Image 1 (cartoon, helix red, strand yellow):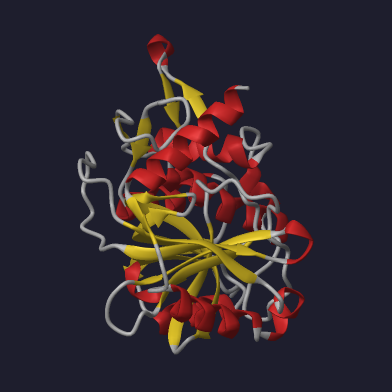
Image 2 (image 1 turned 30 degrees about the vertical axis):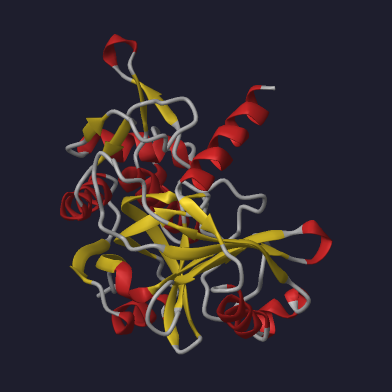
Length: 305
């Protein structure tokens, strides 16, 4: 009963900040969807259609305004009741902003087997419950990938699970907490954040402590650098400002794992694993337009002498 109530509240909030479309964005949305399902890896979705097209504005009183403009948002109805979501620009040429197909898809330009760790509650001193935070949670997914692929020592005695690794990295970070006054979480627990440059330092220090030979560096994001890392089989950490896909009237600064790239509708898209996106399939990739990303943290194994 509680879950139903939470879903109802979320849908009500989205409706409050959106306008139901009569024509308008539907035609452009259908054209973008046609381009998505024409990809070889999306052929099972060829008969997909858009439902509930809305123009969604950002919540006016966001505690931390991002300045993101209104976008068209629609649900993708796929085969076998599978779902997805798509957003595209209200103005200009109506280019794609992002999309997700909730499914396990085989895509050549995507790194597979990266753990999709979701943010989880942490009880701090005094009994206060705080979200693990996107920065250490995303980092733990990438570190766990390297633990399984090449560096088992990086797990350590205190890193039996990806969540354990997230907690270990989190303890090294300068975390800031703030109240969830906007409804990002269903239970209103405190949110937590940290800076990407601090994360790069922490990952390097953690690896050195575990005697793991890697170089962790932060750089300004570019699609060329992303492709270089992905093509070499190295997932990255990306910072950006984005909407919450299942609550698109909310947006924030966010850290996610970059695992792929593609180009659709003449737009470069980055494939990410989002640590604040409950999907049916853990392998689901969220595809976001490249121009929203600011920094890229790479983790490269050192070459042996």
